[in-house]
Length: 183
Image (cartoon, rainbow, N blue to C red; front, side, top):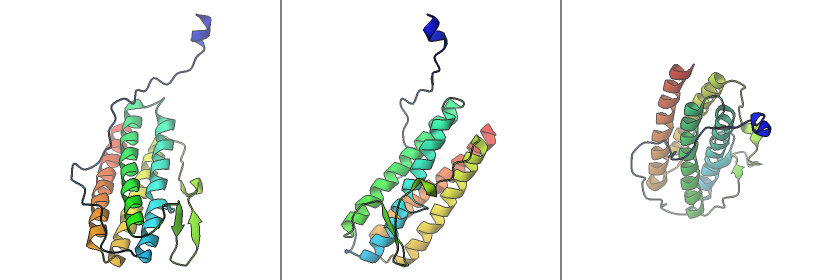
């Protein structure tokens, strides 16, 4: 009995969490033709500094640090992370169909390749700053997707990017609501 007294435990229950995203269908994952320029652009969305890989990792880190102190908020953050995982998966499929490899290397316009690194993340110490960093990351992702849509002349790819943007906009709205609710 004495042993149980000194045990620290996280009682936050993550059962039943689902991806937090717009209730909209996904467009077909298809491309008009193979295109290395589009592969390079999507590789940045996949695993660049501003990317789905960065978003997932940042959200999971935030959820881990919040779960013992604020379970309801941590559960919502995990739901957003799950949506970002779906975005990563859709981008990976597009990269493959366009003729690329899914290898965690962002191919930059200047010809430099950069492997994904946790150095891309913003890891603030308190919950309020975490949410603010997440909002800023979502805004940056939307801006990057919109820039890429202007370069990509493939309606199939751009439909998927537009669907991802809708989720990112929804995440900003939700994060702003969570900011008001919890801080």
